[in-house]
Amino acid sequence: GKKEIYGGKGNEIMVSYDNGATWEKYAEVPPAEEWRSQRNLQAHGTEGIEIWDMEYDGVNNIMYYVAGDYFTGRALYKVENGVTTQITDNMVYDPEDLLYPHNFQLVTLDPRYPNVIYVGGYAGATSNPIGVQRSCDGGKTFQVLTTINTDLSIVKTGPSGGNNPYEMLVHPVTGELWVLQQNAGWAKFPPPYDNN
Figure (tube, rainbow, N blue to C red):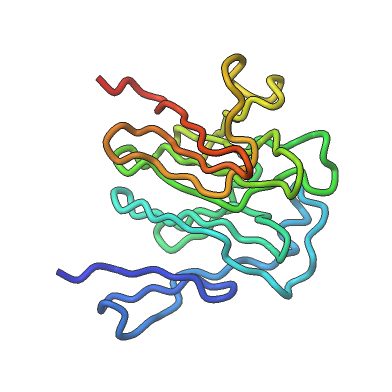
């Protein structure tokens, strides 16, 4: 059967309902001025806005995507029933970083429990104290899993993980989050539910 195919094109998300033969606009990134009203103080105008990553929840028919400028992701959006809502302010921010309090480029979902959303990313050459965040309620609230700053994280002990994510994958059977870290190999986080 035919399935939808989604793809990013500049500041738009496109969808095809005929296996890629034709495409139409599904959603468009709102103007960068919206980001200035959030905690991100460094929106760089409207040029260079792009989709960094997207993930589709096929169970609840919701698209989540990260939009940003040339440097990093600036905003996390949710598209449900044709309505685009910014949910960036539901995320934890780094109070020490006044220029870039949100550093993220990635979004992924648990395929069996798509209300479990992971957002993360790198912060240049330094470790990102909010490198991995998880929401268990479809983006209404987030918690930090990275252990660099235990004041910000719900993980208080154990090996350091999720410092500078370059890729995040949820295992489709176990629900574990696997994070490829810059210069630090892989980190693995258990799911927020009992898997037995």
